[in-house]
Image (cartoon, rainbow, N blue to C red; front, side, top):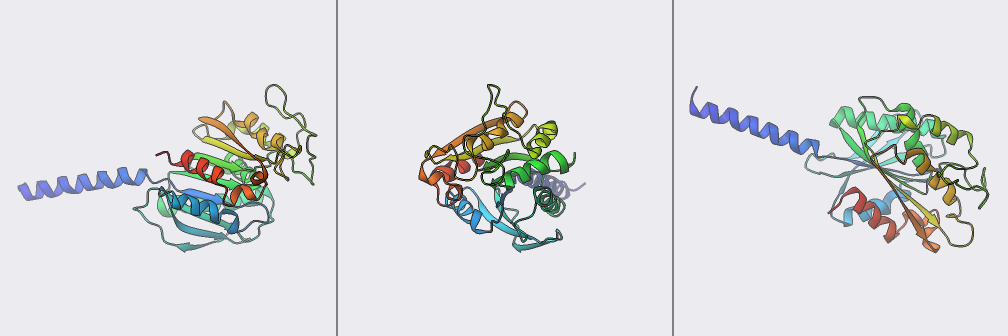
Length: 268
């Protein structure tokens, strides 16, 4: 075989190897809004991530009530940390329904871009939506949920619906004393949650005596710990305190939250 041909084959082999190495390093981060939310719920979180210089938004995925996806933007194979903003057209759907829509998004990204790993940053109800997807709809060949950052997640009751400030508490093991039906389901199937996942649970305390962010109590948000601690690769919490810890303000130009998320997802 001629030397040129041999060199050409070696070059092709090396390039293919390099592409595979680069490809496996691409880990998209999906941003999800909460109940009655919109793009505004995650715009500033995404903006902060881009300003950090560690990630760039590539796609917006709008999910119709029938589960169909409409994409805007352009996927970039050169972007190591692409950001994907997901918008549910019906933003008041139930958790199981939105979990199916999340499944559609994950499946599409896997099929179209061979996504192998991904992160999720969620606000409010989309935290339980992500958890529901992970324990009920995730398949063995689904992409790995690498990192999960729920912000103000109501994992066990919501104020004005089935919770009252300082009514519930956690026992010495971290188990909530009062549990709603959804939480009992989460507990029953917690072993289905991927063990490779790293979790940063962010919640707010207004320091007004309610031990809440005005909508989700600290007990409700921290109920996630009993479900996942010792069941995942790592679990940590961040309590944000003061007026800026209000439920909506946690995702709106909150420097403490922005920095914590960006450092957790993309360590320098």
